[in-house]
Amino acid sequence: MSKWKFIEEKVQGLKDDGVYRKLPINRGPCDHVIDLDGRRVVNLSSNNYLGLATHPRVKKASRDALDRYGVGAGSVRTIVGNQDLIEELEDLLAEFKEEEAVICYQSGLNCNIGTIQAITDKGDLIISDELNHASIIDGVRLSKADKAIYKHNDMESLEGILKEKRQDYRNVFIITDGVFSMDGDLAPLPEIVKLAKQYDALTYVDDAHGSGVLGRSGRGTVDHFGLHGEIDFIIGTLSKAIGVVGGYVATKQKVKEWLLHRARPLLFSTALPPAATAATIESVKMLMESEEHTKKLWKNAEYFKKALKELGFDIGISETPITPVMIGEDAKTMEFSKALLEEGVFVSGIVFPTVPKNKGRCRVMISASHTKEDLDHAIDAFEKVGKKLGVI
Image (tube, rainbow, N blue to C red; front, side):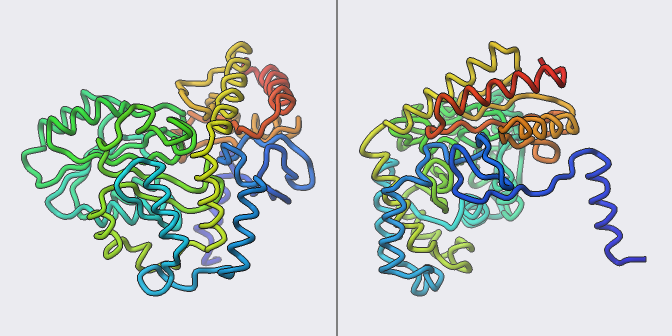
């Protein structure tokens, strides 16, 4: 018997369930239209919300930094990897987010698994939304604090936990996504802040899908609700709307000082590459200069969502450019995605375990770089496949 039989059985299970897939190969930039496995298709599955990943200004900044600094930082930040570019980026992000301080990590996932374990301890309580991102869930698992889960965006559920447990703990952290990536809905941050004040709790918001999308020039969900200074930890990504790679925590200066001593991704993993850091600086400057890109994103998103609704598709409760087209059965979701690809449109099917079983959806990610022709082609493909598979 093969010692790998247990893995072979797991893979066969994926095939039996109709959810096995091979990774597609993108043979060029992650743009509005891509060369996927040698075929040109409209790309509706990228987090490159603003099209900045391929913008000439951003690419030039990256090339210039590459010539000056080389390809890698060469060290963790706490030794000699703390290049002046990272310091410049953190100062710029703090100005952009209108918060006291920012600390940059190698990814958004690293922000959550590094920060949550560093700021919490035994005797603390974490209260987390049931639909929080996997990186938050992993960060909470790494913490020594006790944990409690409240029903998604349900403030009665959250307050019930606070009423029952607050007095038993030193510090309480309410942790939520700002924008929920599978459904595109928003956390009710004003109500969360109100409860946090009432029960003396700290607030922690992962705004990966709000950064660059919501608020003035993409300042995020906190700005969208006018809550500057009211959220204790704001997590953002540099790999989605910003178009590069990395993540950041916007918080107080004293928290930044602590994280530089205790956040494990910063202590044990090489710092961001300089070319990426310089590109990020340029992207943030562009957002601070103009709302052109965010306005185009929302114009495209509203056009697409309206068309799909009129066709009779269920696009859930989305309040953002994230547009989940609800299919249901996992195998049918993957079949729908495959049929769209045959029509020249790439939309990734999202199934269990990313979402609950038989809550599958084709998650559309609209970009500012999509043309009207791109969107019309995609809408026609959705109509054709939707009718063929009996979804509409």
